[in-house]
Image (cartoon, rainbow over all chains, first blue to last red):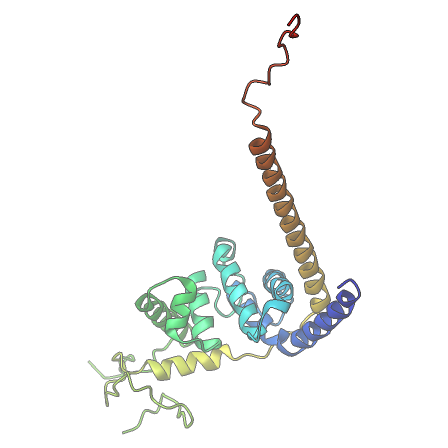
Length: 161
Length: 109
């Protein structure tokens, strides 16, 4: 037991490092979307969020039992974000910074991570209809801001009076 | 029919739950297209990951594990102490009066 421990720790560290090397960028980008920080600049809040989620994944590494570490980290991140949502309310200049934290979380889980609606609802402890409504509202909000001129039908008609 | 403002999505199938209503672009039958548009907005280039992120996370994770192990051990210690106390209570029964050692010596018969 005593002799096995360092070897096991080294193996865990190695596996963890390769996991972070592969998934770090994607996870950090999801974190910047959540915290509302621009992805181009260093994002301390997003980094802290990701760091905490990753450390918990590391602590659970030997008990993952075939679970996807990416999914685990994402879940940790979502939970942590839910608990600290109040800190991320003010806009920081990112893509989603005008949405409420809950809308951001639903949007990121549903559309960026492609998590099914029921699964998202179960994870956040919300009814599926609420998740659906939040997602629709976030999508509408984001599209209306992206294009000030409404692309579908009711565009200002240049007809003469 | 054609929607000049809605880009073509060759490899995204329409979900079966949303009816396609032709000619009415803003009815709630088109969330797939809108969602696909937002999906594309979200698919930005990944930011640069700090090179020491994994090491820092592993450090923190190790500390977390050590902390948990310590809490576990403290819990076990408390449980054992409680068990020992219970054992002592059952065997010794300290609430009973002490046995009487004051019987007068029997003499003279």
